[in-house]
Image (tube, rainbow, N blue to C red; front, side):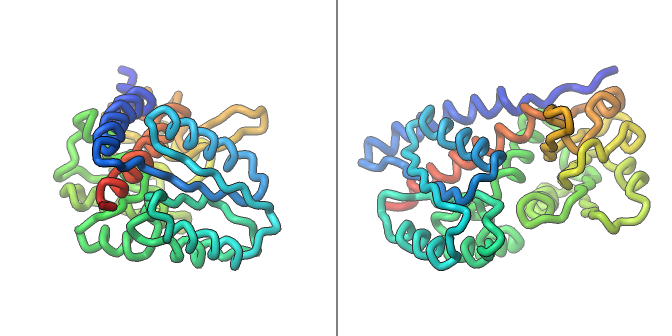
Length: 282
C-alpha cells in the first residue's frame, strides 16, 4: 500500500490564513509586522528562496524590505546593516539569506542579529534556549517538520526517530524538538557506520543532508514516517529530495514530497516567527 502523502503546501496555506488573521489583529494595536531580508550575491537558488519569502509576506500583510547587496560586500558592511536594522522599531524580523559570499563569516553576521529579531532561530542564544527546553525562536525548517508530524497525527512519544544530518539549521534543532516530544532520537551523519540499518530501525526517518536519493526503499522500515528535507537540482534540471520517493513511498506509512513537502512549511514558520516577534515588541 502506498504511503500517505504529507502535503506541506496545503498545510502551509492554512498557516498563512492564520498568520493573516494575526496581522489584522496586530493592526488594531498599531503594529504592522516588518521583515528585513538581506541577500548578498547572485546565487540563483537564494534568489528563488527570497522571492518566495517576499511573496508570502505580501500575501499575509507582512511588510518586507529586501536589501540586495553585491557579491563583493564586506563583512563589516553586512554587520553595519544588521546593526541598523536591530535599531529600527518598524523591523521585527531580520533574515540573512545563506550562503553568504566566501569573504564573509556567516557566524559573525548571524550573531549580530538581535535575538528577538532572529526569526530564523540561528542565533546562539536562541539555539541555547532550545537546548534548555525553553524555546524562543525555533529554526523554521525543524518547526515546519514538527507541525507536519503533529497535523498528520504521527505518533511521537516513544517512537524511534532517526535524523540523518547534523547541521545547526535542521538536524540538531530537530533532534531536540523530537526529544522534547518524548521520541528516542538517533542523530546520524556522513561518518555514521551502518547507516542503512540505522535508518531501517526508524519509526520516523528524516533525511537532511543534501544528497539526492540517498535514502533508498531498502532503508525504510515498513510503515515508517519519512520526512525529506533535501532539495537537489539534478543534471536534467529537475528537483529531487534526499529520499528516493518512488521506492520509499511503497514502504513508508507517511512521506513528504519534494517539492511541496517541507519547503512550504519552512516559509510558513518564518511568517509565524515574524508575527510572534511583532506581537512581543510592544
